[in-house]
Image (cartoon, rainbow, N blue to C red; front, side, top):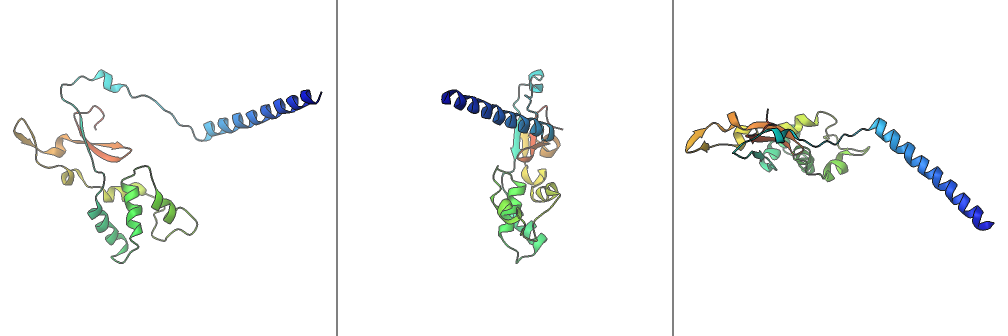
Length: 164
């Protein structure tokens, strides 16, 4: 009899916990929907030349100059790391979380318009690409390398169906 009561209580408790998980997942679905899809537009495009993408991964000289113009030459140099994490996101936000992610955040931290500061740091196409040629004929790189928004920021892509 004790064995039956134990299993009955255990099964009822499991149902209760399962219902809590189901309700939590349903609320997460309603409030934070995420859609994952597979991109298939490339299948309808045939080319003999590969796509080439150029992405800036870091530019510490530019970050120093932008930091000096934003906060002056005597600023907290950890804010340069914050600026780097915002402009060149690599999946880790150690300095953003530590310096700007709590109640006593530094006054220099950004509260909005992060894309403005990321674009302020990132180099324009003319600074990244120069001296392009095809079959010995030079061409203006930025006329053909089109900007493409990616998870790494703006990259410049040639011969891609996704380029603007």
